[in-house]
Length: 405
Image 1 (cartoon, helix red, strand yellow):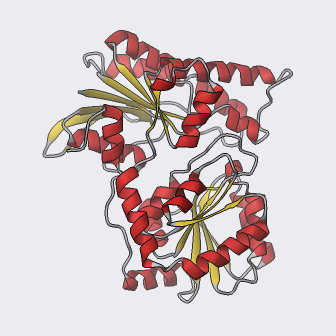
Image 2 (cartoon, rainbow, N blue to C red):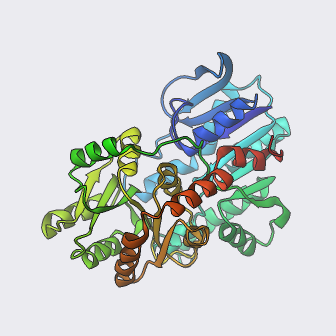
Image 3 (cartoon, rainbow, N blue to C red):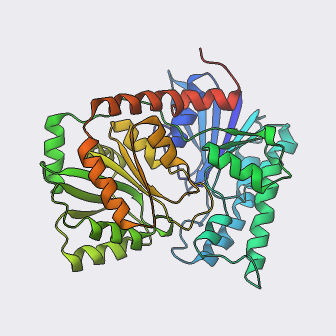
């Protein structure tokens, strides 16, 4: 089977440890050929992998949607060019390839013309990996309006979103709440075409030894006698950084804990200013570091943190959960009530949840985590859940409709 993958996430090497590369390698392992289109300026690369088989091609498409900074208009305009440029790359690079399956992820929602082109050309099966519900997420955060003159932009993108859903033979949603939302808010979609296909990774052993744990903590100035809570990833509007700061303030007197934030984004400066001006002793901010170093740092900590803005009405399910599960640390999720990530964590027995509108509730949940995080049964439940529900083998079987071997 020839698989085409469309993404705006940059891919240089299929061996990268990301949710998409992990999934594509799983397809390669099962004998399929993979052709991926991602942003970049390099020529088409042919990569030999899995015993020297030349069954993986990565083509880079020159799009500038990641270069707009905070300018949402520039980003929006460049997003509208995505399909056009991807179609050109398919014509130029893959004219002799007949595809059997096309996978594509959101964001963006503007892959519709590229998907439509391949579907008509090859009668290909289309599968949407729904990771982001736009434009409603922008509305939730006050970045877009649904009425008035500004509502025109919303209506355009909403129409584009609906078209992408209808072009998709199957829509793979990250969770039950995600699936219920899509079906409930898009009555024109056949519910039988929507299924749960969660974020997934190639499960490998990434726990950090005691010796490495000590060395890593010393390197980053994290006290070895504290329970280290770590947040890693984007620092932007979806995380509601002003509320995160309220949570840090609420825990300033918790001398049993240390809070580590690693990442970058539009709100990094806000956290940096807070760290400088507050002098909070149990808070440490670290700028984005290479993924391998980040994974080691996470493994040297004790509890992973997830934050989502309380205003969200769409059920987000952040993939950073998997990086915490991979290294075997429990998770504290502080989110809106639309997301079911907290329910998953609590019901499966490997973490805690509180609503992201009450910093005092967060402080109390931190206290619970300090008292319970070292329970070995929690690690076992987390590992079992990861292997059962979030491995790429599971996602592969869902997408292809095959049974376990």
